[in-house]
Image (tube, rainbow, N blue to C red; front, side, top):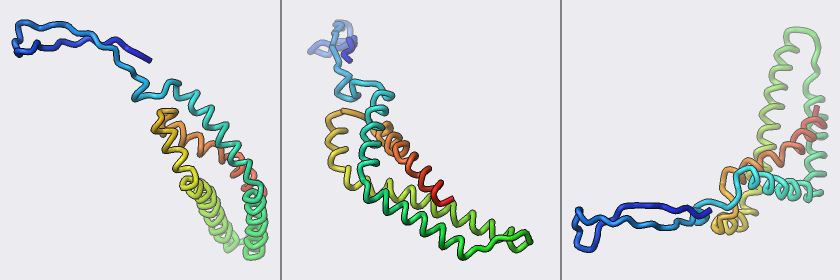
Length: 153
């Protein structure tokens, strides 16, 4: 974490001919966390997964929401084998993709204000960087998103 850095400096008078060589030890942990990005990601992913699966009420509400949406969409769209049905399928698929994307992103966005104070403190202490935090947060929600989309399908 510490690195020896050599540089040339001028003396007090500013005389360029009398340069002296100085050595300084620079502590890189002041600007960089002590662990590598993969370890940061692994630890943050474990914490994010634990937080995601801890909210049992939110999971139950999302399951009910997916079942309700499936019933509503099934009631609206009666798909057959004719040309009009192909257009209905395209509209239904567009609606499903947009809805699933919005639902997945809304959960992630709603969680940031709750974690802002904690994350700001940990980042100011140089425990981790921004990139591993955001990637771990996004990856931790993938299992539930997959389950919700499977229930909907």
